[in-house]
Length: 427
Image 1 (cartoon, one colour):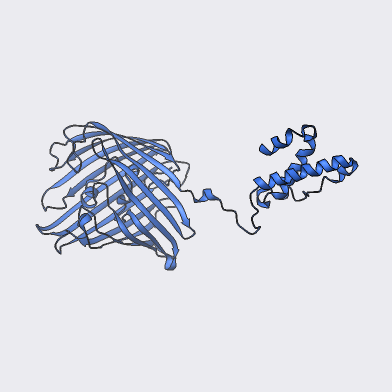
Image 2 (image 1 turned 60 degrees about the vertical axis):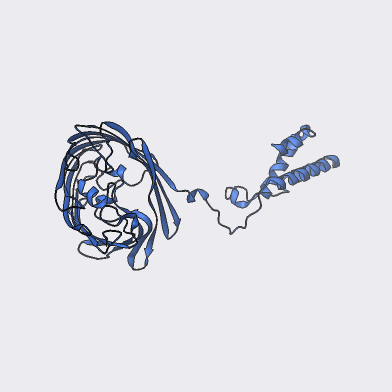
């Protein structure tokens, strides 16, 4: 606009001469990459000069002066030329895919419901967690993931936590893949789910007892290997070298000894779209920060997902169970405990899921006593980005003698890019 106004005032009568000159000068100065291909290949800085020969000398002089001024102005605003061989970088490709999850819950409890810290969390609403999920390609060999959460640790008190942040390397030699950073460990199937992806509002008692109130996530290195067998079931092997800071069964943040975790799973096709996955896990590490006692936590997991051969029929059935066995050598004495859960989820319509779960577990620090629970849940998806859920859980836990039954309401919503659904969802 600044160039046009400087020419307009003294030469408004010759505006029709100025515009072709200015267009011609700009076209010759802009980089070729900014022009549509094949559209301006025949543009020449002298292509319109032949018609000017019929004017008088004064007109030619004025036209030459106008061209000179237009060329000078174009040189001042045009970007520098790029070499023809220089690739054009799309900076938006480097931006991470951003997702925000919101997890809002409410409960009505017959008795007193407490969290792991002993706070009364019954009969109240809670924005239980807000999670920021960032994912991007680091370069052609690695992908990056960063997941931050803000969770309600106690009523009205929130804490920021780095749940996961790792680089994932694909296409390594020998058919290997790797994760380096902080991640949810590969013990069983359920532990890998974030809070907003749970098939029920609560985590199973056995998972909370042996892996922690919100499951187990650690810093370390993870290696995965998918055996390239041509016949028979596929076998997936995972080995993880981690800090051993799990506070439920390992030494916690005071740990200065690495822990080892392994998981093996195999897959069986039951039909074109249905399958079964059977797995086993083992974790070994120091039981306490002081002393030489060790923890050995083993587990088995079974997942069956049945889908109709006709994809248009949005129905499914998922059965999932996991079992745990703990051998822990504490200074106060050895602990041997077991625990398990089983759940079934039936999708009777595209947006509706009806499920039930049974829990039973012993404890991670004493040899006596156990807790159990039964629950039922109904989930409804209004869309890919909003899920509503109601449920009821009956709890029998000697460590929470005031607790009885609890009605739950849950709303989970997604802002931004939608990541893949968890294993129990069929959309």
